[in-house]
Length: 451
Ligand code: AMP
Ligand code: GLY
Image 1 (tube, rainbow, N blue to C red):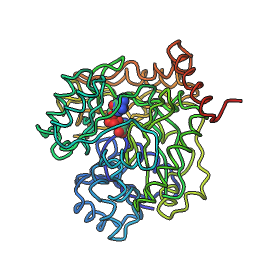
Image 2: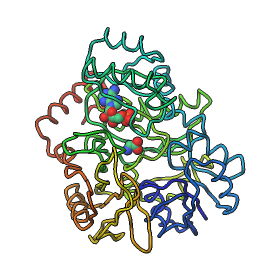
Image 3: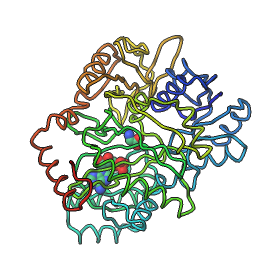
């Protein structure tokens, strides 16, 4: 098979490396790709949101399959355009990708089909939105732009003042253009977060190994929200009991709901969950592989990824017996100084080789450019230094050892990736309290009592 992957970040690098392991795969193409990807796939200059350009490129390359990885082209309908030209394409069509493309759609879907999520109201004029938050008078409160906003469309307002400011800048100030002309205001939930990516062909849903993202820019979950500064898999909070409950109350109901709405979802459906004291609830859906979740999930996959993509396209996912490796995988993101706000590009990276100069490590490129044989920074998130090992501590130690060997001017990374997960494993007092809450919940609801 020759496969074309659309996208150019760390997630796409991880998809390419997994596809490269497949005995079925002959040649890999990627557009636009990046410096690191260009060593494993032939890269092209067509942007990931350029639907016409990608269709034209596919007509020239005639790949056996196209994989559309990022959110924007999926929401814009790139899969529909490629399938209309006869290309076997992995990813949801536009009418299903709306599950990420519109928060109003996803919240209404969950309400209609009784899928657990935070309570909410929808507003398109700032006056009524402000009146509502003042009446509620409960902080923090959560304000979300309806549409895609580069991962920046969620404000956790700590006070009335912050809520009013967020509402005004989203609705009146068009902070995210049309994406924020409608907002969702929702209840603030608490509890550990879990990312569960799943394969689905609309009939069967196969959850992948769970993971934990670290969204804030700085240590101790301080600083601004980012696309993700690091990940670990599996997520220790996601026990077998919780996984069963999620399958019954969230995963299957979501797949069925999309079918009932005539919007069958085929591809990778990402469940962003919060394990609240009242049980697991959906924080968000993404219509694609997460970034940097993919960098820790796919290395743990013990199955041919190309075969999975084909099975999903042919609606025979149920025939596969997908297995996962044991152990843990960790990814530490190395970013440009100033990310996620303002940062320089084009800085030379030193000490970089694919294998991270540490046994078992691998460096996925998120934003790099290869110029005259040298790697230069070319984005906010630059590298995802990844390692698997039998234990979480072992994987983290190796990831950080590999991070130490790489440097560039103003490089920034979090030094506490995986610490919360380690605490969960070691039952620190805060987590014991949480565990008690979950057990009380499970007992009250009569589900999946531990033996
Ligand atoms: P999202 O972009 O929807 O993933 O939201 C970004 C982050 O905001 C999430 O990962 C959560 O940490 C936080 N968040 C979103 N919705 C809520 C909520 N209802 N309650 C508490 N935190 C939330
Ligand atoms: N890491 C979160 C996302 O991909 O949206």
